[in-house]
Image 1 (spheres, rainbow, N blue to C red):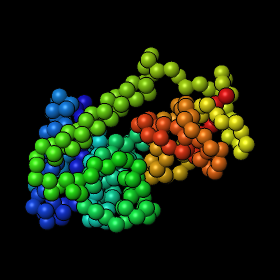
Image 2 (image 1 turned 45 degrees about the horizontal axis):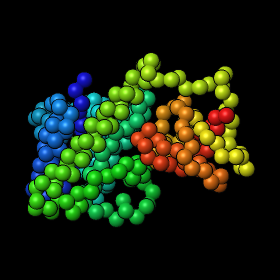
Image 3 (image 1 turned 45 degrees about the vertical axis):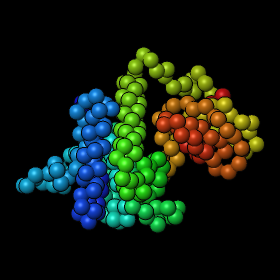
Image 4 (image 1 turned 60 degrees about the vertical axis):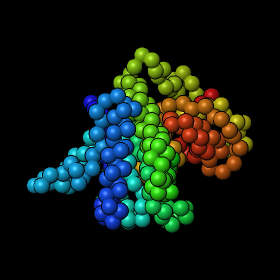
Length: 259
């Protein structure tokens, strides 16, 4: 299936900025095609929804089909019911399919709440991902500087799509993947205060919401992770690298120590 993205943005921002977001979407889409070597698309409502289409049904269909989401963060975006719903719906669909959401946020206009650390379901979800900072870049007059950052975004998307393909092979039982150990051949236990530093832990899942799940990193159910750091304190006593290679101090409730 051809890769496809979803451009999530506040339409009023695009109107007030003389279609700056639409023009950026076109440049991003073209660069993604070059990096991937195929005609990938990035859906945008004003270009892809025609007169007479059921726009709500069309948006749901495109979110369901999207390989990745590019949210353009602005104050309007974070306050838009439709934009917020696009982020949460995309994440929910990915998790329900047993995968991990692929989000590539573009931070376009400063938002005080986003930077303040205040807790909000959508903001918490977006903060997990490394954003591409266009707050000053949008005023850059040297086009090659902008092109370089767009290229970095396209390469990040290519890496994530490649990882997703490999994850899909693993879930289908590829011979290249070693099955996760079970209690039949390796003992597991919950971590207790005072224990020695564990070498490995297995992800058993977060019982909380999708937003909370994303806040603690991207992990695969049943997979064993190497412990990279350990302090033995609090609800998150050890650190591992998640499936994107990001280090996280992980909660002991979601992991079991592997002996």
